Length: 499
Ligand SMILES: Nc1ncnc2c1ncn2[C@@H]1O[C@H](COP(=O)(O)OP(=O)(O)OP(=O)(O)O)[C@@H](O)[C@H]1O
Ligand SMILES: [Mg+2]
Image 1: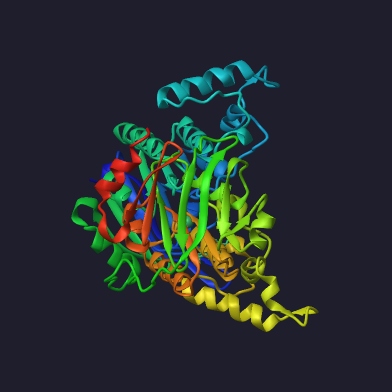
Image 2: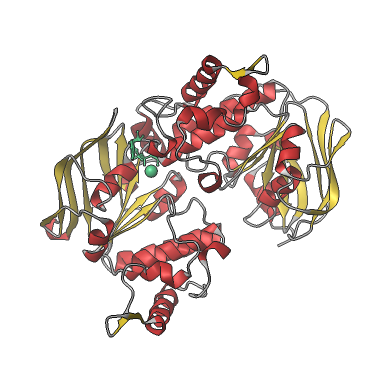
């Protein structure tokens, strides 16, 4: 058993101002295994991995790789010594090419001076071929969708021939097909004896891919078990430290008369065709479908981010042109985007500023000054409601864990109290405990008579929260079901209608 041990982290402790992020945490990873690291938002998963990877210096504890003590001072040192990490937040040189990004900091050189572009191209192609990745190495990163950039990042980690590879929420922006592809890569690495540490909030993924599961809570180690010995409910209990009896709050809302009407939307530069549906006051309407079925494009077309070739949006029978997001906001719409990590966060501002920035009108007194008190109260209300883990409201948002940053952005849009709230994958990256709170806030809005339209790839979530579900397929509406009286099979059948 002991020769199989690849990585041993013992009693790792790390403190940030006002936060004990890690408190004597230990983790052992064997060769050729996938070890899942689980815990609520802010539990310390990313911090533990950053201590391994040389991004943070640990305050205390020891790390051994193949029996030898290591203490990397930089990520370059970690990579050179066989430890790679795919980060939760992509940090890429977007203006440069795919192959530049893979070999950055270790360019092959001719005579020690000029960069050997030919070798770089050849080596990139070799890695891509091995991993069956179909991307042109010369392509500029900024021209690619996030999911492909994520695959490049994964290829980069593999290209170092690492002994240990950390995946920190690698699938949050991948399509279903890409997730399968990633799992194939992970299985191949496992067969080669690589030790893999896998962080994710998606239970189904964890059950499928992992051999061992370690659970952390509030910066502490809670349990390590073989994956087959843990049921989903066990994992949840260990993570949240209390019994979560219900996954969804009761649907207390009663939809009223028709409020929003979307008529015959056809996209100018996308495949949306003749999309029509309506939503009522106080209704939570789900949009289901496979990846690239047009769900996100539909929300973006309603909100004026995408150009419509044809089609109209009506609110209470009145036409809304929604030519751009500014106009849509004035008309009472708000959109929480899927890409909120990239597009929603003002990283140098603090939690309060990030929370109130879209609802400053609420805090204006006599049109003259902004009330500090009400900003403080609103912010605290959402910190409490979403159980956002932060020492103070003045903490910079970039010091929060990935999931807690998301909660702040969700709070920001809920605070604008729009008449129509468009949510794209609202619980992605959010832990199981906090998901419930988000569902509750969605239902609260519906109870106030607001209309909520929500895109989600998690079917149980749509069934658990929505009143009605519109199913999209190949850019069109394939059908509509009553969420209280349908099955996953019925939705899947509709989702496959036009593919
Ligand atoms: N650079 C930093 N400065 C200050 N505090 C930090 C910093 N990085 C992390 N923290 C704090 O350390 C704690 C653990 O954060 P970490 O990012 O490790 O959580 P996590 O388990 O990865 O959560 P998530 O699931 O949301 O990604 C959090 O309370 C966070 O606010
Ligand atoms: Mg994290």
